[in-house]
Length: 158
Image (cartoon, rainbow, N blue to C red; front, side):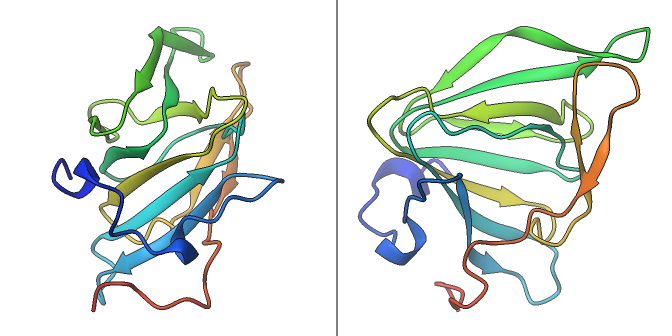
């Protein structure tokens, strides 16, 4: 991942398109047996995810711009609470998520003018895995499947 996010010149424009309405998740590659997938996340200014989990391992590399991430964990009363301070990812930075090490977070582009792009590798076809979004209060998990913004585009690596 570190090598992959060392330069942005390899990412085709079709997998780096910004949307005014929400962040985009573009499939770059999915293993034929769906054991892993690689996606680009493209964020317009100030766009953010809901608080969510992944249900599988993930490795995230920052390619363009900066992204903030705030981790969450369940408190003793069953509510979600922030874990530490939000973390800023800069181009070239790499981080991880998994149910074992911490899997719940919220991510956003803090810039008011510039897009941000990160590359994510996941232990499954992340656009087809049932995951959850959360609100910090008790009992408010909601299942979702994120899908892809480019179901019509082919994998870039064959």
